[in-house]
Length: 253
Image (cartoon, rainbow, N blue to C red; front, side, top):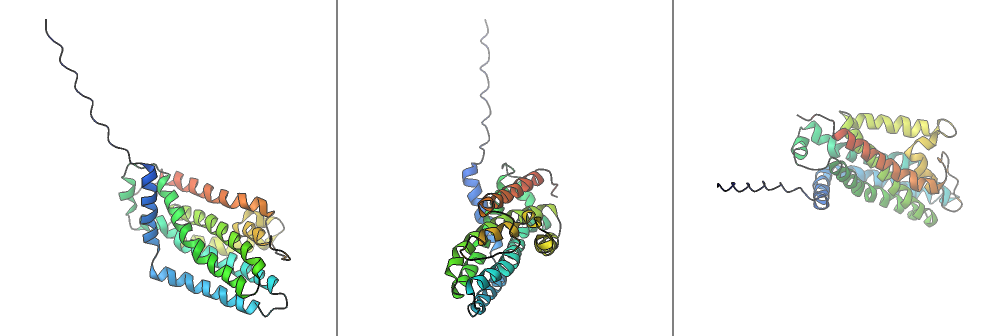
């Protein structure tokens, strides 16, 4: 009687990278690629202009309102979206343009991890570089009551814009120009075009948060501040999902 051959041992399974360690690693990688001297100086110059506008607002007969108007018209319409545009479209867009993204896509990672790291890295740079000078602008204007509302408005607007422009960097070539058109036309013209149109813009919801400061009258707010605290993070999450969907279907050579 013959003895059956022993069954061959199963091949060892390839280790799957832990998402809990991969996401922070990609976050740090993308953060290093985004932070450059030119970008810091460029955004810093725009932030310095916000502080200077705050100094001028101090001499207004109603410094609180003047500070809020300047933060809405310059900070939320110009500074925050342009900073997010500059950094967000390049977070993954530069890797696509340089055909380097394939080296990250070849790794056995869930598709959602890389867009999530890009949105978080962009937000981590945009929020302090834009929110801090806007808060300082309110303080130097003597509008301390506006400062806290400014901090929340700038932070949530920065989060939403970061998600939108990271997704744009994956969808469009030369996404910075498409993003600039979006900021100038949609976020500026459409937001003020008609009653109710602001609710379809990021800046309209950010302005609603700014309007929670006492004694402030803001124009073109999208709705209630309570809704804005839900809508703006939802925009960032929706943009991340779009970027994830796109990253799973794009061809990288």
